[in-house]
Length: 254
Image 1 (spheres, rainbow, N blue to C red):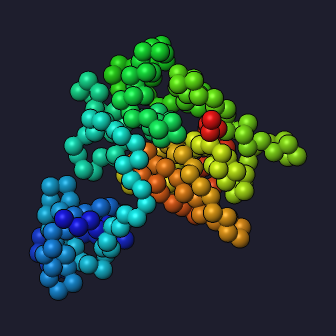
Image 2: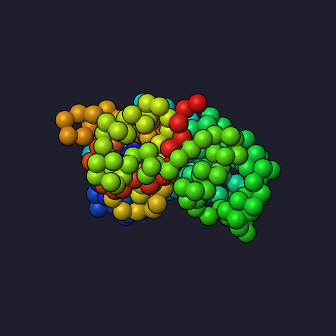
Image 3: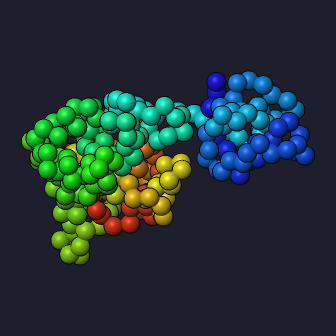
């Protein structure tokens, strides 16, 4: 099967004609699967166990050129439309692991290695975050405590990005690049709860900045996104709109 993504709101129709009954409707940046059937400007696709036709002008190939499957996540859910970061623990789907998985990425650990050490060496933190079986979100202080389990030094991102002249923390392309060159900035952003793409409003989420390529008044930001378990990129303006003010953890390289 070939992956495509929608570039606009796209009806999936029963037959490859505009007046045919609508099977479903997908939002922009939704992934669908195409098996090769085409008909006069239409592609036959599968989406959430539904099959139908979408006008090919509303679809483009979903190309994957950047690294993916960056962290080994055992016991992932079987639903292909779940975020990659979702996994099963004791029969319960875990959905709030973007922070711990970001630490896995920085420390080159699998999810199993991290949770085994975490549960053994800091059971009180494990119990508090795990709660009744489904994990809650993590704060920057929680992530620093997880780093402590592995003897890894970490500091608040706000401290690492503090501007002595302005007496406040702030993001700049050059300073964030300096941090990424020498360690792992774990950054709080907002993402779309359906697509996982960073944006100005949405679900609070942790990412790890990999590099910044300054260009004129901003540039491009490469980052590890636990939701997709891959490296992604965004413009500096997209990044700042999503991150706003520094909040997170900085893990310097040993």
